[in-house]
Image (cartoon, rainbow, N blue to C red; front, side, top):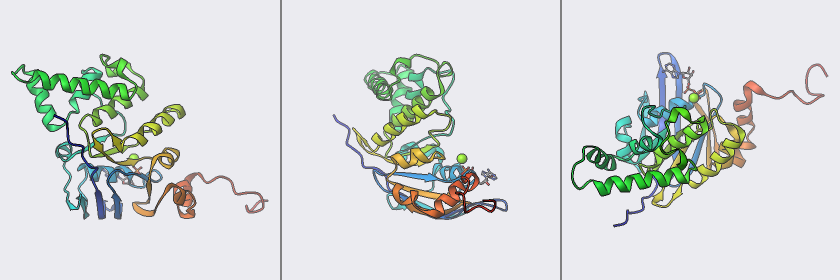
Length: 273
Ligand SMILES: Nc1ncnc2c1ncn2[C@@H]1O[C@H](COP(=O)(O)OP(=O)(O)O)[C@@H](O)[C@H]1O
Ligand SMILES: [Mg+2]
C-alpha cells in the first residue's frame, strides 16, 4: 500500500504581537508560508526571529494576533506539532547523546510511526514489519543527506555539520507538510552552507508530497539563494516582504539588516574626505 502524497501546509500569522514585560519582541507581524514554498525570515540580531519561530512552535504564546494552518485556527503546542504535520529543527542541534545516529532519526518518527516503533521496542507481535520499514526509511534519509555511514555512531563523536544533517533527517522522517528551520547555517563554514542550500531547495518536492518551509536565518546569502519569498524583520516589525531580488534592492532592508555593519561610505560622501 502506497502512502498518499500530502500537500504542503499553508501557514499564516495574522497581526502577531509578543511582549516580554515592557519589551516588544514582535509587533503586528503578518506573514504567510504558502504550500510548497520556502519562505525566509531574516533580520539583524534581536529583530525577533527566534521569538517568531517559537511562536509557530508553541514555545511562546502570542500576546496578540492569531495563526492559521490551511485557513483553520492554529494554537501551536510543541507536543502536537508532529501530529499536525509540522516538524522543526532548533538552533544548535539537540540530538540525544545516548542514542546512535539511526536511533536519533527513529526518535523523530511521526505519532503513528512512533507508536509502531514503541511497539517494536516492546517486542509486541505484528510490529516487525513496521519497525523494519521505519529503519529502512531512516537509513534512506541518512543516505539522502549524505551521512548514512554514521548510522551507528554516537552523535557526540561527529563534526557539527554532520550532526546538523542528522537533526534534519530526524525532522524529515516525520514526513512533515511544514518544516521549520531555525538558523540551520549557524556554526557552519562556507562549503557546508553551500551544501545546505542545495539540500534545502530539494525539501519542498520530496517523494511523498509537498512540504512548505519556513527558514529563520541570520545568514543572508543562504536565504537569498534558496527562498521563494523573504520577510525582513527589524525591531520586531516586518519592514519588507518580497522575492530575493526585491529584497536585495530594498534600501530599507540594507539599512535595517546591515545597520550595525554598514561599509564605509564611498569617498566624497563622508565628512572627512
Ligand atoms: N524569553 C525572553 N524574555 C525576555 N526578552 C526576550 C526573550 N526572548 C527574546 N527576548 C528579547 O526579544 C527580542 C527579540 O529576540 P529574538 O527573537 O531572540 O531575536 P533574534 O532571534 O532575531 O536575534 C530581543 O530584544 C530579546 O532580548
Ligand atoms: Mg535568534
